[in-house]
Length: 138
Image (cartoon, rainbow, N blue to C red; front, side, top):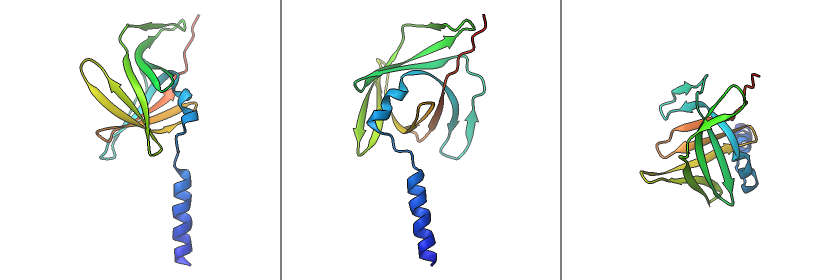
C-alpha cells in the first residue's frame, strides 16, 4: 500500500509542473516587473517597488527586452538600448538566448502564463516576473 501512495505522490508532483508550450510564448509580449529573485541557497529577495520595468516584444522566436520607466500619466520613458534575444527549444525547454556587444547569456523559461513568468539563469538564479499594472493618475 505504501508504494501506491509513493506512486500517486510522484504522479501528482509531475502534474504540477508548468510545461511551457510554443503557443504560450506570445504571453511574453508586454510590460513586466520583477516580483522576486530566488537564489540557489534558498534565499529570496522581494521587490515591492520597481522604478523601471521590462518591455518585451517577440515575433517568430526573436525579440527584444527594453528597460522603461513608467510615469504617472500612463506613458513611459525609455532609451534606445535594447537586449536582443532568440528563443530556442531543446527537449521541450524554451531558452532565451541574449547577445549584446558586451555579453552573451541564456535564461530558461521555467513557467509562463498570461500574468507571470519565471526564468532560470545560468547561475541557477530564478527571476520571477508579474505583468505590470500601470498607475494612471490624471
